[in-house]
Image (cartoon, rainbow, N blue to C red; front, top):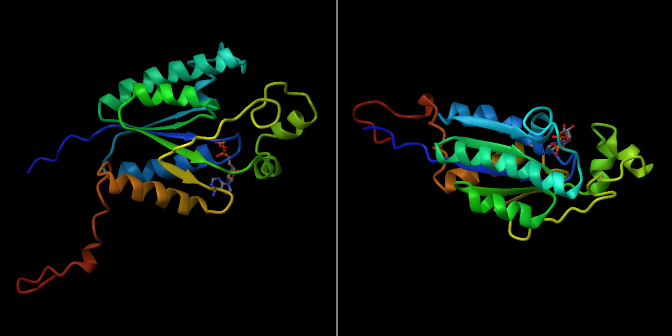
Length: 196
Ligand code: ADP
């Protein structure tokens, strides 16, 4: 029996800087590959060094950034690729546009609050933003509009990375977008008279 073609999808991780979008997407990537999926990860920080390196953080540039990324995600997802996209993408209508464009858009809200993100301050940016040195910093000096009906919410300040990954995986399995893990051979009764 031939396996049905993999259906593409876009896991769109949105949330504040330092919320955990990249960390969770990175942890998910090898697991999806093990399950036989073709995976591409699109990450804000990386994309901004290449495809959109000419852009800054004004509202207009943020829209253009997401617009270009959406184009890539659209091509990939319609060709059966699992896309893991991590972008702050602070505006609701911006994310609604992505939803309309790509195949199987799944909004994943990484809901870590600003206080926790600021405490983590992975890139040292919050300290500078609170000191007034970064004028357009999301959650401090620039807006973030939380999703109203996301497919998945990950409170990454309360859950471990593993728990976040497991939550996403079971959602994908439930939707039939990812095959369930093969059972361990040791647990399967292969003897001829075995009843399983
Ligand atoms: P973002 O991509 O949203 O800007 P990052 O993934 O770069 O955020 O940074 C998140 C930081 O929070 C990392 O240092 C990560 O180790 C830490 N962290 C702690 N708990 C979690 C969790 N449950 N999920 C994701 N990241 C977590």
